[in-house]
Length: 274
Ligand SMILES: [Zn+2]
Image 1 (spheres, protein in one colour):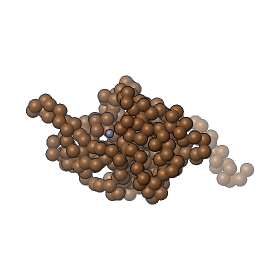
Image 2 (spheres, rainbow, N blue to C red):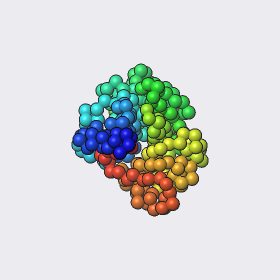
Image 3 (cartoon, rainbow, N blue to C red):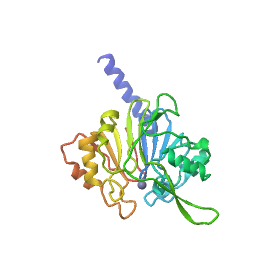
Image 4 (cartoon, rainbow, N blue to C red):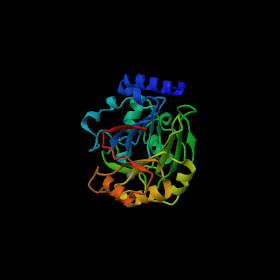
């Protein structure tokens, strides 16, 4: 037995005796709460919470509908102002003193309405890359084809009003080990997805497939085959509300068998690591 084979065998023996948490150490871990809400833990243990819609999310399993159990995120990211992407962001941010990164127009609205203090609503814009968690972890803001309004209940009148939420965005997250995750936010099909695919080369794409407000299964399959060509896709933003009719089965059927992309059709509440 060569030295490298011996080391590999030894590693296997050691791993076999470890609890599950230790086996996922060094990997990227994702916890899906349904809709577009993901908690992503980097290989180095930093926590990103994206589009937190948890407490009133009809697809979030009951045992996870508790901001204490969500735990402290190091950063919160939002893709646009709609309630099914921002609902729990202000509460999580103020509870854990974690900044909310999102479209600058949405940050302005958060600040001017007094929803968040300026230090918890930092500003950046599309194509910008920031590294608030250190040099090994990057967050890049990219385009999405959608809209972004923020509805807010005026505490004086008690009436709901609509405010500008900037332009919608997607996020490219680069982990310490180079693994790249593209959270598309809510988006329709657009040609510059090809540019995003070529330039950033995401390994894993979190992709809306529900239709009505975003791409449906056919558009999403086209984006995978023609534009993004990732190794992995997790379908999201379907089934939460009646109009979001697209399903992972329709998405897989539209994708066909001639693809190198692996579709991970997980359920809300599931965790997966890469
Ligand atoms: Zn939306």
